Length: 400
Ligand SMILES: Cc1ncc(COP(=O)(O)O)c(C=O)c1O
Picture 1 (spheres, rainbow, N blue to C red):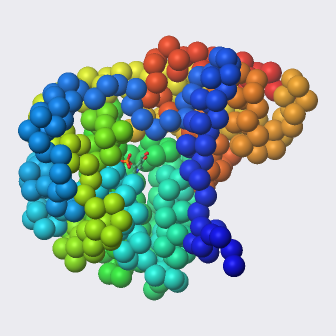
Picture 2 (cartoon, rainbow, N blue to C red):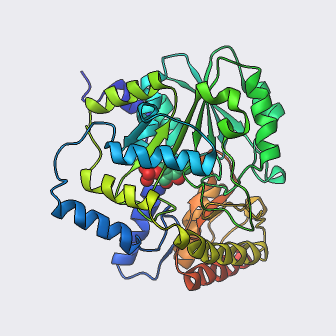
């Protein structure tokens, strides 16, 4: 009898976490490493949010809460969906989990059966396919193209849908490409979805607030209200509110699904951290102006990274609308050889040799299901983004 369950054969440790850990180890060993692998803002959680958490502790908000969130947080989420997305949910249609990741995990495990297909546009966030596979489902990746700025085209969506399609997992702005869909681009996709009533839509809006140049964020059920009854609109406080460590994510959706997510949570982690929930109430209800201030900095770094990467030999980098990632193609360096004589056959080789030669940690595109490319997170000091891009230029220039 084997120690581990069959389900464990269907998942792998997160590639992004693995690379961040490797960069941390090299740094600890004294190497000069710039890590552009982590998916979290380098800004501090705002003080008003921290203060709300401290107050919650002092007020004795330290006990078990309702499994799927305190009423005050559900009310703040209901108000957020109304205010920012024009979506009307009742508190019974809201669930709160330990990060957006738990909400996604619960939603998929609660709904996916063996044989169910889940469409995931590639490049995709690393956790989607593993969670689907853990649940027993079949991943249907749909590759996007650099020429389309890595956005899913309606024809490609249509072609991927079958009678077995259970979910489309949609993510705008995207991790890892930063691509965000305009209202017209979203409309083209929702027009396809309207024709296929068996398909549920899981929209991961985690990077909603991180958009630049006046881009207007939209979410599927807002653009096409007839999809409301089969859409789970997922979001969280991790990225925009700089609260990755606090672990609060949430979703609004059909009551039956929300209830099932809560049942699953009641048999695993129970309620998300009580203090973090109070902090999230303040995040959603409190001042929002710091988001625009942070975005100014992110935009400057995006522009810097895109411009410098496009000057690196063999690299092509589209300019994305949002998130804090860029996703350059490294097709032009595949087949070349490093100064040390190592052949670059894949994007993983590129990332490995770049880390070795120049101490720059990036994540290879094949981890996100579309290569040869790599992901850079520019949620790190501007001077480090600049220095890392200089090193990438030097590394690419040294390849023969
Ligand atoms: C696209 C996307 N969805 C969900 C998550 C999960 O967020 P959380 O930290 O709230 O679990 C992340 C985090 O990296 C993400 O990039």
